[in-house]
Length: 303
Image (cartoon, rainbow, N blue to C red; front, side, top):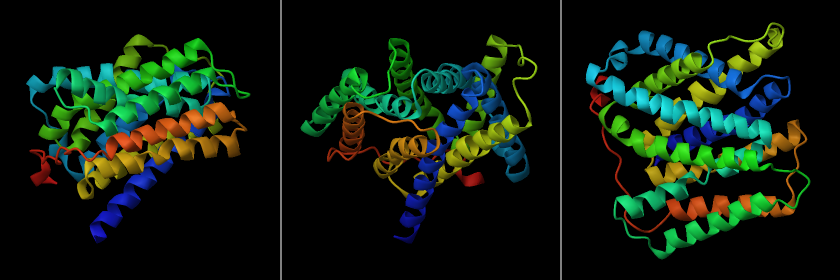
């Protein structure tokens, strides 16, 4: 029971850091920092920090076979790189709370994938979760509140959910075969490389000043590296279901922080839609149907 408490605390801390990080990203974009630039710098700094940490902690976690380079390249580009971009781009077009709520449609997409392609049965709990999430997403889209959501922002948020679902489904093999820190490090590497190739220009002179670099470092450390480490630590002590439900605190925290620091206000219809999405995720992940047991990766013995 004591280890489970550590697990819950770790995941709650990770969700809190991700939620606060969304407001920090919005603050940078309010200073004319583009989502392209933010994603590129965030991923680059995160990768460098991960490499430095693993080089000092355990260099063997940096070793992968050549045959796996293609796998990690796809995971980093089609998964991590696009996920980061669509999430921040949605924030730039809408607000933090909306971006997080839309991204959290991903578990519903994963359930649909499991039914269609993995032949899992859709029980009443999962069916109800899909219905609640769909209704919640519709309410967010209609948005009778004071914050207007453009069609481009909505499309970007939905793409973030699609990419997040892909990143999770495609990343399962990597997590099962390698230590999560190895998977995250190489995901950061290929994601950062992708954006440097797509957008090789650094940035316009005068856009970034000393104060901005502090925010960039905060996002890289406390909204990327540290929460991922805490999240995977929690997975060592909790079942995937418990980890997922606890991580659902992120949109609640993000909305609260955005309200307190950025003055963002969600209308009642949008707020109710967000609550329905959160309820759908919780219902989906607390289904009484058998859950897959945590797997032990082949690098676990070297940690």
